[in-house]
Image (cartoon, rainbow, N blue to C red; front, side, top):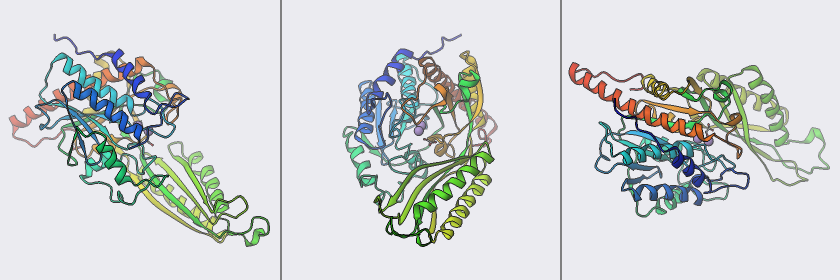
Length: 434
Ligand code: GLV
Ligand code: MN
Ligand code: MN
């Protein structure tokens, strides 16, 4: 029997700590938002590590970063990776764990001088979070669509910086790394991520084999009223945009999640104009995030948002506009790749369970292109998008080991499938994703 390839757990844990200093916050988290100086520094650090090992590094027009074995970079790879950008008060593991574990897989294979029937390539997707420039999973969507976001020239961050110039500056920050076109054929995609929820920890399970992701929709809400004097305008004459928003949101909060345990409703951002202490708000805006495993339920929630906003707008003499700015339908991962993950976890002696992801991930954009799936590891108290986010080192190492083994299992499975195809002359395809 051949000796099993082992990742270097200490190197991985050290790297996670090193990268956490880039954009590190006083509370132990990170603020490394997409295309920021900190994001550029983290990408640069990884690119330097790869270049110093003689690996081939490229970036595409959406600032996705690729690390490949030289000589095999033109073959259809099994792509592994995640993202290095973070929430404004994010944790040190969301995205970084999967990215650095994927690099650990590449280094382990390079250290062992091994080669496989399919090349393994690493990807760092740009702007997964979408907190600075919505929507999230921007880089992987551009890769999958073969085109940049349509609003790249007009989209600005909170400080008025245009997306197009921030992407250009991010690309320019790596002058030694050539820029390639968007998208290319891939054989499969695997991503390791922290669960960002409480299930694995509560059930004392070491590895999640993610078989699907629930759907997400994001909305811009705009209530238009009229400003007026805070002290002199009686209730009957007020067209208060914020009062309308608050009344609508209070009703939606009391309805959507209490009625359905699978539904999620979050208001992450609110603003008013003219934002003066003694002036009635003329405009109130908000961002809403809704999630559900079923598209029909997402439709139902969206209708409820619209009707509730309209109801309170009417009763307050205001108007309400609801714009859907992001729609990520629920998706099923490829059952064969999910089995590769389960088998890998069992081979390595880890407990494993199939699960649905509550968060969206880049794997969702990539899965229409090639058989894909994700590996989850538990995080403390299920906390994420929070500086307190924490993954035990032993779980980071277990996740990386499972990523390596499931990638190798996927290569074996794909090679076997190709042999069968050649033998039967069939166009048999793997799982459901192709
Ligand atoms: C990803 O960051 C998400 O919001 O699910
Ligand atoms: Mn993430
Ligand atoms: Mn995140």
